[in-house]
Image 1 (cartoon, rainbow, N blue to C red):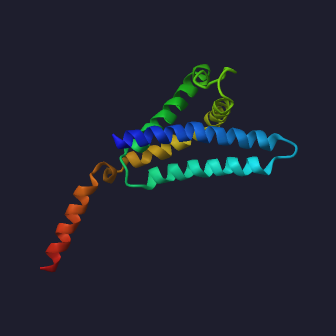
Image 2 (image 1 turned 60 degrees about the vertical axis):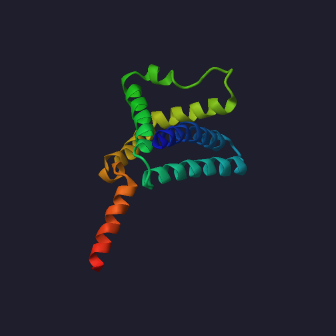
Length: 153
């Protein structure tokens, strides 16, 4: 259950935080005189999303924590390949939404179109294939301690 919850949080961080940061960086870069504060905020947000992603991929956590976001990103990429209009309809576009949500949607559009979500989806799926991620940590620790004790006698 914890892995599923972490997977949902990672998915929200990738879609919301990553999309918002990319949109802020792109809009700021297009200006004639970029604001250094916006550059640092967007780069810091990207680094925070990267840190969350790295901790989930490299850490000893349930494989569901990487499986959920990988399936969301890969499924959205497949929908984009099969039907562009359908994939773009998932992105909030009405002016009644909050500005940050619209920015996150526009950044997500950029990440989807450029294939970054496909790349991240595959990278997040690799840990699911590792058999060690599916075993319980307590079982591994007990086996290690019992073999270590038998070596001393």
